[in-house]
Every structure is written in structure tokens, then in C-alpha cells.
Length: 250
Ligand code: MF3
Ligand code: CO
Image (cartoon, rainbow, N blue to C red; front, side, top):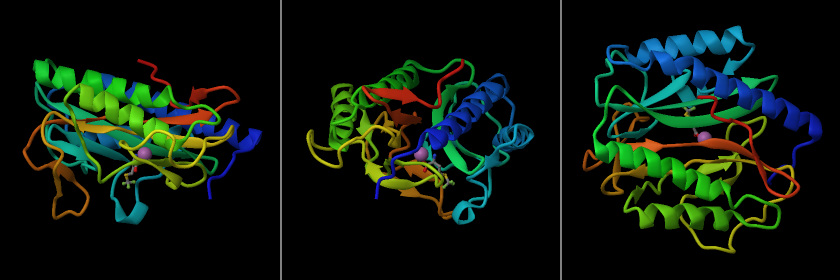
């Protein structure tokens, strides 16, 4: 069942989303050569807790950390560890934060120092693919309209779509109905209604679409070792369009 949020719930979702945005902004200056992903995770968890939030990923189905830190050929769910970021890396920081029982979820990919033109291209067009999807959000449109728009943009830009993972509804739980795939047909799937809240999150690669999962059972990597990017926003369906609840503050 896809829930419709009340005014009160929407207000709490806005606060959860804003805390996600603020945490991203807080982390950005630390994303430099030499810092470990574990240090980023510690900074994030402390900041989240100091600001009245809850790091929802930590403990979720046994996941050990507040952040997912996915470097280069890691698509999603990279576990923070002792890896030191180096010049030329890209890293996706993905986080879910609970605030008074409601969740916000956003990911974006950052560059470390100066990166090659392929990674620049991948980052730019993965973020734009997300906005192509978001533009389809309004009452009466369907989930398939979002999926189709993301797929069309990714294909036009020759980027691979990781199909095994998708966006989702969100509310008191980080994953709620409906699924929001990054490929699909226009005019299909559930209809959007005012008060629904969904996460749209294209995961695109500069190469093949094939992935594998490490023995840690979380880390998702591209099979051909090509770099991957991932951008995600939590989005409210409004009366005549959408509101991004996790705005970029940088
Ligand atoms: N943002 C991720 C998602 O949309 C968070 C899940 S990571 C987990 O699914 F560790 F919490 F599972
Ligand atoms: Co998500």
C-alpha cells in the first residue's frame, strides 16, 4: 500500500530531509585526499546524533555504519573502512536519517581532487538523469513515467543502468511501497497522488550494467570495474508537482 502523508507527517519528513542535506553539507569539506571512509562515517554519525537525528542505516539488516561510502567501481552500499581517499577518486555518500520517527534519504557522488573527464561526464549526467525523473513527479502521472524518463536520459548519454536496485517509497520506514525502477514504460505502474513521498535514485555506470556483490554481502561493484555514480533525492508529490525534501545546500 502506498501511504499518503498527513500535513504533520510531511512537516517531519521535511525536517528529516533537511538534516540529510545539512549532513551532506557538513561532510563536503572533509572529502579530501587522505581521509578514510571510516573517518567520514564517524563525523557523520556524531553530527547526525548531535542534531537530534538517528542514523537509520546503522543496524538495518545488520548493516554496520551510518553512511554508505561507495568509491569508484563500487555502485552502492560500500561499507566505511580504512581506505584512504586519493586524488582522482569519486565517492558516493548515501545516508538515511530518522527524525522523530520519519526518514530522509539522499545520496550524491563527490569528486576527490581532480578527476578525469569520464568521471566528470558520469557524475554530471547521472545527476541530470535524476532531475529528468523528478520532473515527471506530479499527481496523475505514474511511476513508469519517472522510470522511462531516467532510462531515456541514461541511454541517450550511453551510460549503463544498474537494474537490480531501485528507488522506493519512504516515510516512517526507509523502504516503503512503491518500487521506483530506473527503467520502464511510460503510462505504467502506480499513479502518483498528492502527499506521496518517494526516493528516486539512478545508479549509472560508465561501462557495462553488470554487477557483483562482495563476500561482505553489501558492497555492489561493477563487473568490468568501470566507475559508477548514484544520485538520490527524497521527493514529495505536491498539488501540482513536486518538492525536493533533501535539497542540495552546496
Ligand atoms: N539509501 C539507501 C537505499 O535507498 C540506503 C540503504 S543502505 C542500508 O536503500 F544499509 F541501510 F541498507
Ligand atoms: Co534510497
